[in-house]
Image (cartoon, rainbow, N blue to C red; front, side, top):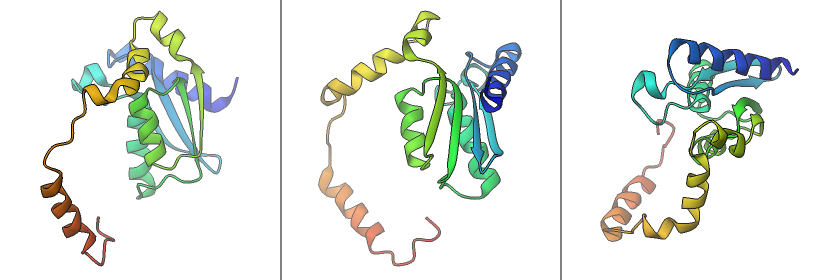
Length: 150
């Protein structure tokens, strides 16, 4: 068994035993060094965004002092849901290894599949509103020359 996947499994088990949430743990590695670990804390925090991957990304960013995790790899017990996959992409994580797939996850009572399907019907839920006002806000941001603090 891969040592990083073993760590992700142990992280998930820690969360299950503490009653924090489902069997989802993640480990982020850069140049052979673990820079972030996390497990599902949805139940603990009453926050649907506290998936294992998200928690690991938060910790890795804090440890490395950056939002750019280029050069990192993520090991996770379950195939990332669309929210986590988007965060992985935003963080520039280059490779993801997962244990169980979305069918396996559905088999234990989670509904990840519905989120993949919803993306195909996005226009029913997501509606453009007040674009001109928001474009003014975007222009205000674009006009800032030094964006190093953003």
